[in-house]
Image 1 (cartoon, each protein chain N blue to C red):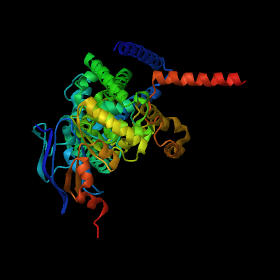
Image 2: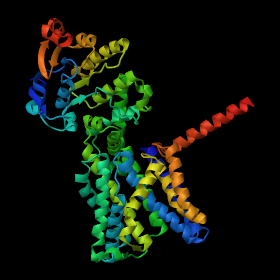
Image 3: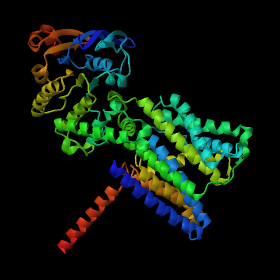
Image 4: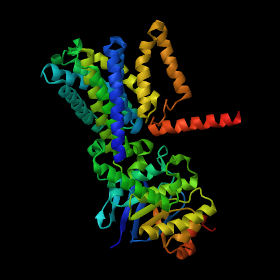
Length: 322
Length: 254
């Protein structure tokens, strides 16, 4: 327990430092506003990625409607902040809660299904959510909805770290172990006293909650939202980043999301060719590392220490040979 | 009071009667064997006792409580645990985590406590880790606690499955062909292990097995099923001499 608080303190110190450095660079224009926006987008996408990983990677349930929950969060947060004039934090939480609640309602019938059937049903629900939003005049329908740009770097930064930390805590707990056991073998998990359905709904609800938070941040980042931002392709993007990073690896998701969000911008100089390079990279990745960048491993201080020791050990041997 | 009473269990799949009128009484600390030719319905009986299938008719009473038709995870909470014919470990999890999962239903902290890292989370997790390690020690798997369970040799995987079932703290343990794929040496060790866990954990055991040496060696009573019906019941010596059993296994003399 003591060890945990020491770690927590070190973590807070490190992240505060990273934040201050990045913030300083943004203020002094070393990181120009364009790049700053990419960094913020990366943060929002990381929240989406790690939350989906809880369902897809850890609980092993293939869902294709994550962008739909992002949409619910985005619109709910926007309504609360524009129509009710509530503070930004309240709007974000409202977005998360609305999305989590609807996620639970959808999850209750849908999570009785498995595999391909679940994927198709969640895809359909994603589309239903968009169609519903398209037909509500109150929030602009297909014309879109104007939102004050309240999302600043610190909001994204804090919520990204918090989401990661919370989902990581869930995975390390008995509840998280139960979720992973469902991914590994649902029949065996049930025989060991795990209520698989309960844990699936739990994972799905939590993931929807964080997708909603990410949606709220995105709405106030973009300044103007239309339903088609949150279409099927957005869901696929999130799934791609989870699969590439490694299903069951949060740090893998962070790395993959960063790369995938940055790549289209970074390759901009290649103009049209980037649309060829990007898919080819994906194909190569899946051919040679089908488990994703990290598999189910995580980057940790311990792991880095081990790796460093191994490296040193190897170096030592080479020296001896020389 | 008997521990387990299964009364006239019958299950039909469409028109097929897989098991009919299966009746079983087990007391505390009994060790029974369930044998029969392939396809006789042994695993189906297990699946009914553990809630995977709900019997078409008949009922199951465990510790004086009617548990007919309740879900598998609820059965485990009522203190019945099982292993599987084809090993079903959580392959991509460490050996220790495999055992820890059985503690889930006994865990007393909430998700919020885990996220906020309140003291009870640390207390409970430490307790779970300690108890899980103790069970691993009994099965001589403590040195492999951090390894993925899929990397264990076959015999150890079988042992881990029994360890995982015992971690759920059952009063009745159902073993589905625990000796399948083991060599004679490993089977001998398994027999000693079965006797040991029955004494150490003070539980009843019902096992399905094809290895007659194991069944005759450890079981006190044996139930023989064929075509879904009980054809004989008795001590190993009685079963060995029973003409119906011989007929079921070897065929009729013409």
